[in-house]
Length: 399
Length: 173
Image (tube, rainbow over all chains, first blue to last red; front, side, top):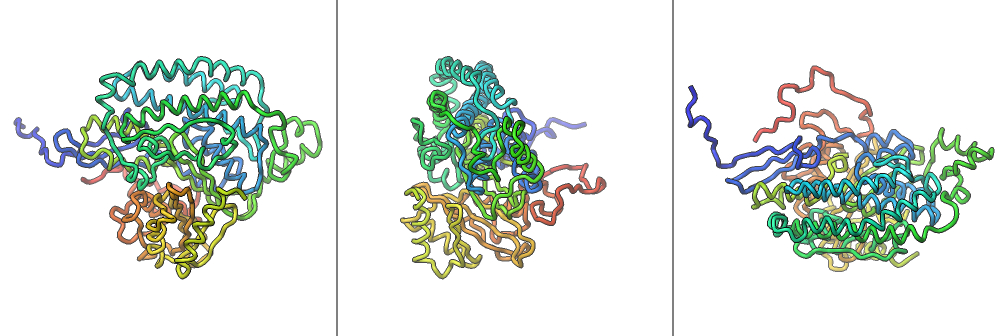
């Protein structure tokens, strides 16, 4: 018979395995934490449970088939991922899209940024015990997904962009829905903040937790809101504008101490700024074509109407489907500001219809690698708040 | 060409002035700057790029490999350096064989190199010298082969008998 002493555990170097199937690890992250009492001595993140070999898979797909892979990597901000990929292929081919397409791309990318931040805010808050926040956030996210559905025909994986433009012209229903959304959303953000920003429990759980200095953050290759939370104003939309971001007026929020609370404030403010960009873009969508087919007929798909009514349009659509596009031999890198940070694509082309190598520089991969550094010395309960605050997505980090 | 596109070329000229002996070739197509160097000179070049005040490449933004099976040193490793102070981006390329024994690790210069080098080991099989914790990162520990090599087929499965059902993914503490 076993006695009481057999159930005692040696408390020195006590290891706790969190995940991979744990609701507060936001996917299938596994953390091997070593504890001294309740204090975390070390936490080793283990990833790879969602590895699907997308970089390998893209090498066996044509350039437009590979686009549909990209939005399945970061499945809560699909349009942003498509944008980075399409910009890289455009850089390889030397194609410039029309201004109208660039504006629509910006609208979709910023709407996805808001919806991604809403998912982050809801899940982060529910981790720390605020269930109402989750319901509020998913209420407004539904509106955004509906807007994306109106334009692209699917909610989370749009694959709506084409090399040299977008798949379809803008229609009035899309514009009206965005205008309605812009009217109601600012007060909703205040509603979220009313629940959390000055809440005593929230402050206790987030202030001075998971502090990372700007130097460490740079060394770990942090980007996006995580780096800005540490006080460095690094935003690719400002320092290296792509897709007409230089036309819009917006600010970059930044924190100063680099704790969980600062990262929370930065993302809340980013939603306001994104809404500002959407409002400017939707009122100023330029007139004109949405695909630059006339300038670059060998790389750009013909608009649907021309493909169905003219002979040469039909032939080029057919060739486009059968042969794909063949960018010239070379290498190109483009990075964009994803909701999670700097998303970069490095594509090596060997002149054939398939990418020779597609490398995805995913922001979550770098953020997760720093969990060990950020958790050291905090309580096990704070681990949940820290991994919530860096807003990673395993689909993107494992690829 | 706009002024913001000129900045990496300034960085290239600084590196060319001081480190000419370590540079094998340069490539500036598609508005990116790429420097090819030999693996013996890599550490010296990277140290200079990080510590020189005109350059200050403080972030190793990305690190990945490309496989060219026909070349003798078949893996091309590409480092993506970024300077947050000056807004330069610069690529450094370095070639290696798969079974190279003394390929240098950058883990003691950049923290982010740790996981990136583990990923290259996982995907291409290069063993970095002096890496503190070199093990597979995306694939399971008992995986065979290195998936991103060009001679690794797209659809490949281990035979069912060799799958480890007893203790899948168990890590000894």
